[in-house]
Amino acid sequence: MAPLGVLARLELTSVRRSGTRRPIIVEMGQPEACESGEWKCSVKLTAIDDRTRAICGEDALQAICLALRFIACGLDDLLDDGGKLLDSEGGEFPLDAYFGKAMLRPRQSNTEDPSP
Image (tube, rainbow, N blue to C red; front, side):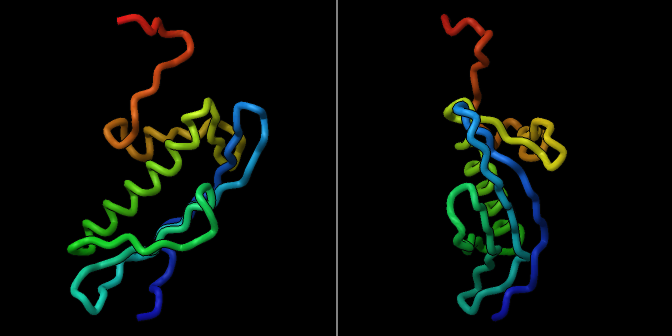
């Protein structure tokens, strides 16, 4: 079955703690039925590599949910080393506003006291 097209596309910039900048493209395809009865969404996240992956679920909604989780985790990983994500206008990208705090790992800010 031929891909149905891009459902959503987002362009970001990753800024590492060192200051190195890298463009990031996020694309998610429309869910499509597989011959096996599963559904898949194609996902491209250039933060990881340039491959397009098929994220599969039992139905179209689960395929979408799992594809969003894959994207959220991939972008969240970029923040692990103290990096930032910038939107197309150069402002800080609100990852939690897009994916919700429940989908992302908690982070401790540099100003918080790490003691229990």
